[in-house]
Image 1 (tube, rainbow, N blue to C red):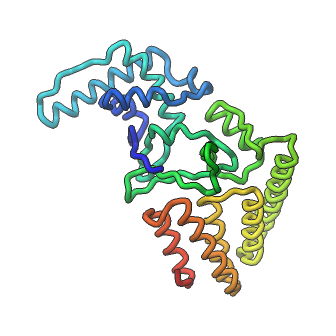
Image 2: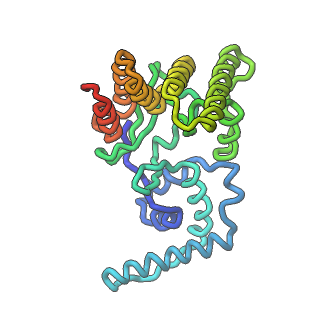
Length: 293
């Protein structure tokens, strides 16, 4: 998929003004996006909504007047004031960071559900001006396309569930979060074991004057193994591979440099596309290691 934003702003203060100038069809689609039950009750009071919407309307008028001097004040209606908290909640619950200080909401992409081990990944492609969705796992006919709402895919179950509850108002029931099944138990055990290794390394690193490259490379190998055992792919895994390639170059492990570099680039190509600036950034990174790609 590749989709342009329905609404793109630099801050929440611009959301109301941007929503007011949308074509009616786009506005209706925007209002159909999900509102988190966690955030619905605490977004804005009626008084604050009235004040903010009125202030935004007057600001819009001032901007127009400064440009051509023909502005006509159109203060918000009761309906628009009533919609303001909902619009803000929709924005907070659905926006994506698309870079350069911009946040955007999309009609179709914002409707994808979460999975802790998703079968697709989304990234903003600056060359296309679109948010793109690429499959990172085989997807069968009629199978739901899922994304991860989390920054870190390798976190423990309670950490993932806590963030999803606090920010999106739901409890995940994907296979990785199933505390009863053998698959779910195995997933949590692998993640916990890796977390213990990371903590042990961090404690040791605090006592060392210089980084231990061999130990760092060992951690990267372990993280890669854990991610692949979990079925997690995408940019997080490609970054691990490229970091491992850089560390392998420092210790002179040429076979690993080549293998890790090729795997990282292949994953990056699959999840962002060759027309993405992200892919070209990874390509430059590999070339800096000394690998021809």
